[in-house]
Length: 196
Image 1 (tube, rainbow, N blue to C red):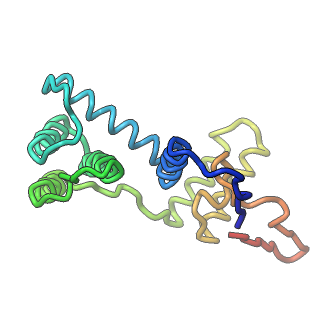
Image 2: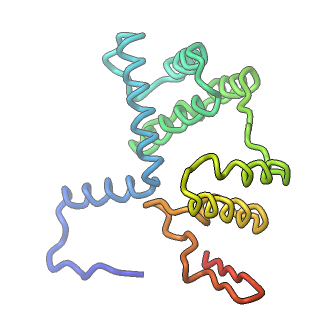
């Protein structure tokens, strides 16, 4: 664990405030920061356009109750509504305000949203029939025969090794995917080493 060198002079209150804000932001993953910023903007837009409210923060139980009803009437998924309330709860807590999201009424409204509009998990496990179809159609997705073979290999490896997509695909955010150094091909076997 890295440590910063000690300061020669004590930090100013402004410097401590900046460090505190940096640490609070660092407590959220980058994707969560983006989501919370988007949800807070949605709350601001609702407050200005629907309520014409100049003061939106700190929110009251009544304000959030109407906001939940508004999001529900707008057709948002229950998971999106829960995320929006979680965002507002975070900001209330960080700013040391009483959190209306912890109230009995808000919790019951969220339960009602979940019962009236349950979030469905549409993901299904890949079956051997689906794998066969994927392998058969790989040649139709691309005109390059080499790329089609790569698709077939990735589909087969992922299926039979029970891999998640993040393990064998590269994204700038993914620091732990398979590399060529993790794969050894012998005359009789294929050895794949998972480092994470």
